[in-house]
Length: 267
Ligand code: DC
Image (cartoon, rainbow, N blue to C red; front, side):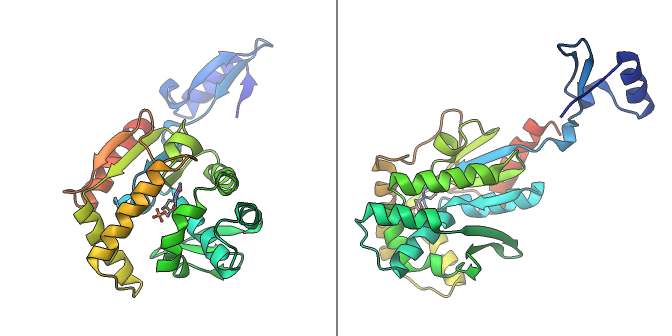
């Protein structure tokens, strides 16, 4: 956004309104020798934060609370891959039918809504928040999300949702593929034991009880699939800050990311 004016008028208006030069990005001459102000106030700058990492590394909780703290939108991209997987299972499409699964992804309308307990996930008007966390979906989501056509559809949608900023996106390929120019990139990791414990608690909230050994096998298998697939494998993006959450409290994780974000915003 910009507008042009005589420089003297600009200076007068700025001093009259109490602005300082550091409050806006620049006052420059444009091609018509007019002065252009780009009046983006520092405290209005909304950045894009990308948080990637393996399953149960703490990224969902961190992303949600960081977004809350900054008044940003939280976009859980894993939930979107889960929603497509749920539809594949409901339609009983064979898991190797890449064409049919890609077509289904194209016509599946997913949206996320903010609620007190975190995001709610909808397919059309149907609330599928709970269903996308079932064992059947978890078991098959790595395969469905490995299909390039599914990824193309969802990445396009994620970029649209990220808009011009004020968002925290969380997933596996946000910093590497979806938004490589994100202002802040975080790569979260944690020890397997902590990840199993966290996943167990998360499932318990949804009334699902799975024994730890089984959860560990599932988590390790998902790591293997997510890091070795051909399409956008999970890896640390260039410029991403690695955060090991094994011995951090949720509050510490959140404060760390919020602190980095504020440094970038200039607060
Ligand atoms: O974060 P999650 O466990 O809910 O993610 C479910 C699956 O979706 C995960 O196994 C890999 C896939 N995923 C992906 O491929 N790319 C993303 N950006 C997010 C998730």
